[in-house]
Image (cartoon, rainbow, N blue to C red):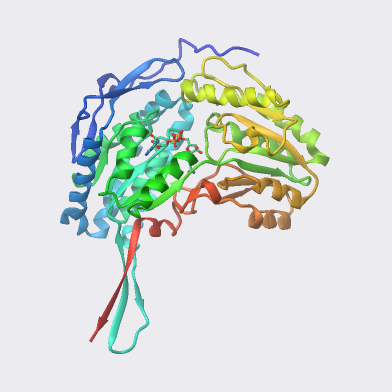
Length: 494
Ligand code: NAD
């Protein structure tokens, strides 16, 4: 076992944006400081270094951004833009993102500690998301309804208006892409509030829009904290829709606030994914995939499979394989190509994760961190055993490279245990039997079920979202169109 030491020979790039701070808000096509002059710090979790400062948007700034988005929504340069031109702009955004992949990935790795290969992968998917949605503007059909011969009745699909996009820190470029691309494709305008722990790439994204033909005011960026900036945005009467990715408690609060004036909401919230390993599974493949499922991104993923249920007849064999896979992960500098896991995103988050491990120990569970010991904000893959599905660590989202290992003896028990959670975002099943796979897929309460794979999300084709307290609504798929449009019935009598 070794303690993490950052290798001084590894180059930690400093994009020009970082040297330029304090960073400003992007409102109505221009860059402005927060009206209060307030800023917050961006901190590199690998080193603790303050990278730069960023404007902390006030309620006045939010108001200006929402008004700008409203004006842009009503401006014919956007509202009457030909569908193919809207498609072209989405393709331009994809191209400009792609051309700046390394720079954006570097900003994310410095800001929230993700390994560079992973943050690069994220930008690549974000690019594909914009390309996917570039196909929609030219295919947003309405409907003609059946009617008697003296009338003509049709259904129009129209944009909602101003969309407030609020995102979490663990997917700093992907989450915004999942929201901004469909919102623009369907003709809405956007005010984005990124997470304060990972705002750098969002600022650069707004800058890069200058290289596209997106009209002024269609996209606005207000950086800041949740309680001030975010709260002002969700309360603003000029916002028609809130699309939010974040924790279940904040999602619940947003749903309550939004209900005051019936704003539309899409909520992508927390998860506590079950992983069910049936006795007939390919155990080596299951162990490798399950380990990746809760260690990828240091386990800071809503879809992390953090409750592993294994059939008692194969438990010992699977456990040994799982620990071996966990041991194989290399923790290190996000810019070291050999690093598979970086640090957790912040000191506050690291302390929270460690608190869960202490709680598990206090309740008599066995907590084993394998491979490299932790230091700084690094935490090695960790398995909790001798625990139950109703323990705190099985019920609450830990958001670190931590999973609980439990066992079951029959199919029904496995499904019951998997579903015994307030969450329902993603579930994973390992089996070689088709009937077991499809029965489990049907019975599990989850927006996504993976069979013999994990953590795969599409760049737009498959709907994504949660059952139960994992959220409301879906991103992607054809379902996303309902999330960003109103339908209007037009009845013509002649
Ligand atoms: P969080 O809920 O603390 O914050 C998310 C965003 O909401 C941030 O931008 C934050 O500033 C803002 N916010 C906080 N309080 C607010 C308020 N009162 N009004 C408006 N905005 C407010 O979540 P987090 O810690 O940044 O992210 C981790 C959480 O996100 C986890 O629970 C994870 O499961 C979830 N998540 C879900 C998905 C999904 O697609 N379902 C994806 C990634 C992350």
